[in-house]
Length: 155
Image (cartoon, rainbow, N blue to C red; front, side, top):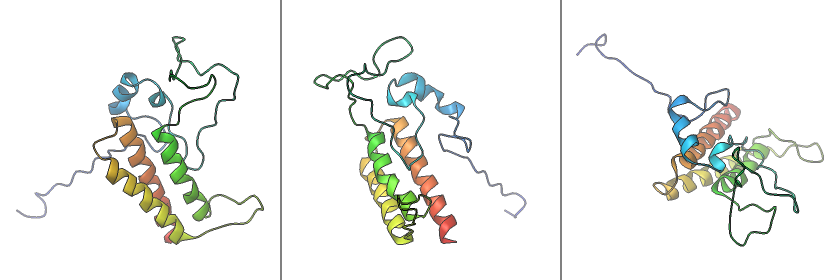
């Protein structure tokens, strides 16, 4: 077999496009899973804001509550896997120097950024086979983006 007969095919398996749009092949996941799947994943730097107490819980288009968890006070939402991923990813932006500290300084530390990315990878390894398609796709996408940013900073 010579060089001309070989063909290399590269397939992008990420859930979201570079513009942040959901790819067509993943639309069935959003339609099938109500709740967290209906929101786009946040940038890894900040988790979604908490709903204020005393207000009614968020609702879907049909008027049904987004989350119905017994024993949860009104206005409070249950933490989710997405919150865990966001919490683990948040320090990476700080350690890569992409987020400023409150005093305006920088805490760039590439080794700490790598450590946090590795921790997210451990989460991916340990939860393999136990996540929904949406959760797995979001985790893979966050890891990909953080690794690419790390490589850009590392040079």
